[in-house]
Structures are given as structure tokens and as C-alpha cells.
Length: 248
Image 1 (cartoon, rainbow, N blue to C red):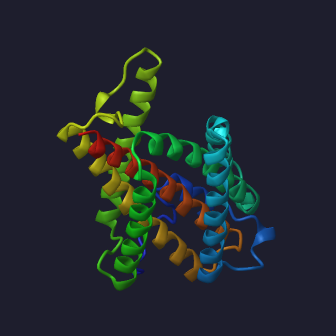
Image 2: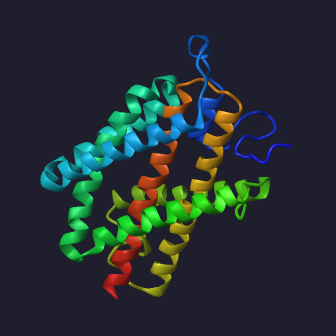
Image 3: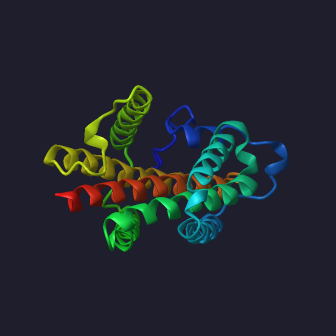
């Protein structure tokens, strides 16, 4: 049995961003095959675009909200409409989300000096550490590991959804507030950061298995896009966690 477990025994992923890509191969895209090097290179391109967008958002904060909206729309199109077009939508997504991140980071930096470099350092430190653990076999994406991470992420996004709905009624979960420095609030953010970090392992496994199975070339972009989605989520949650700690 393959050590990869992002894909279940029915050939489908439990991650919605993955399942669309694994089960929608247009015949026209089957000539060229996905490679690990190709996915790594495309991840580098998306990171560069994200950083470029962040510089724009940092200098033009008015683009923060438009960047968030455009990035969300592009993510939904990539996941649910046409993963085969990820080569076109993923770079635009990275640029738009980078603009959003630049504006958000500026807001946090104005409130807590030095928090931006701390969040960036922790995000890439976690990425490098988990990649090393994954490649060395210290962390294995077994079926139980996969179920734990997917269940945890599902619960977190349900919490986000309820909080979003409550926000329109003038309420919300105070525990999610970036200025809530209580131990319970910090503990919640730490748990979210842990699950966001562990989801990177599923991204690594997805990309590696895609290359091993010889999936179509466009899956390099789709795998890089999936990894970027997780990294952006992780970075935002680290910013929130650090702001809570600094608020104490």
C-alpha cells in the first residue's frame, strides 16, 4: 500500500481543493505529466507573486479589501469550476491575496511593532520544519492522521462561519478577537495554528503522490495553489496568535 493517504481508497481526496483536481482530467491535458520539480518551481512563482502583491498592499492599503474579495473568487473558481485552468487563476490568486496580506500586515504592524517579521519567520520556519519531518518519515500522513486533520479543519471553519454570521448581528466570538489576550483565547489560536500547520503535510503528500501517479501537467499549478492556500491561512492565524500574546 502506498504511504500516501491524502487520496482515499475510492480515489478521491477528503480535501475539497484536492478532490476536484484528482477527478477532473480533461483528455487534452493528459499528454504531459506532473513532476515534483515542476510543482516546486510553480510554488516558488506563486510565493514571488504573493510577496509582490504584499508590497503593493503594504503601500496602498486601500487595495486590502478588493484583494481579499478577488482572491476569494479566484480560489472558488479554481477549486470548484475548472482546476485545469489553475495555471491562469493561481498566479492571479497569489497576487490578489498578497495584496490583501500586505494591507492586513500593515494594520498589525501599526499596532504591534515588529510583528510582521515575526509572523513571516514563524510561517516559513513551520513550513521548513514540517517538510523535513515529512521527508524524513517522522510525520506520516496515515489514514488516522488524515481524518484527525480534516475533522479539526472542518470544526475550525464551522467556527469561522458561525462567527461570520454572528458578526452581521453585532455579535461574534470574542475568543477569536486578535486583541483578546486571555489564556483561553490564546489556546484556541494555538490550536488553530497547529491544525493549519498539520494541513501542510496533506499538501506535501498530495503533490508527491500526484507526481508519482503521473497526473496531468496542470496539477503542478493546482498543487502549488493548494499549498499557497494553506500557507496564507497559517500566516494569518500566526498574526492573530502573536497579536493576542502581545496584547497581554
